[in-house]
Image: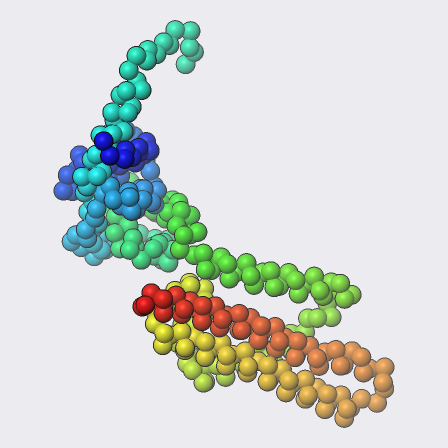
Length: 112
Length: 219
């Protein structure tokens, strides 16, 4: 097994959002998925900071797309998860699963 | 539904602060979401949403893209504080302020710098110092030239105006008791000129330093 790379919580959410969106993953749609699925309303700047970091790590790649009128004539930046990104996600998931094994949470006597 | 454009000031602030590679996609995403929000929110609500996104994003990227500006402002503030401290030690700051002396030095020096180079080159030189971004060696040479002309003109003007003050003192003074205050005011012009020269020297050296990065990139 090669060097495993563990991901932060938000990094995992962003990678999963990109995978869910497939060919249509860019800033606006990623933000929308994060809000619709896990109710996380992150600022566009925070999202791009994470996207830039993931791209520097080689976990995602990007390409500039078409410019449209509703974007003020500006191009979209599409993101896809690289093979290394998918491996990192898988490693993180396996590690989390391993840690959760045999853990039983008891909420008896715990006030809300 | 409203169709007002996104707040232009917020957009301009973001465009200034964002890294060049993110400017187009990020501003495009914001405008797209802004247009979507306009379908079911009030105009004020949409403007507030845009401002919030712009400010949060600017805050995240300010330190990354505006380091040069922050460092330059800190160094100028440090210089100003030290000068102020020295003035205080020498018996109060009031005697060091004389608006006519400053007017005799700074505006003519700026006019000379524009006359020798151009208003565009002057603006470009200041922009290089504040943004820390230079595009070519030609631009570096022009920027250094602007600050050399500005600083040297201020120095020569300061010297000339001080001499002029001394001539006026020599011609009009009858009571030696007036010599001290009159001499102090006349020498203030030269002191301001020296201050301008120091700042111009630092600015020119900063551009030279940025230009060295350009040479090593080419290598």
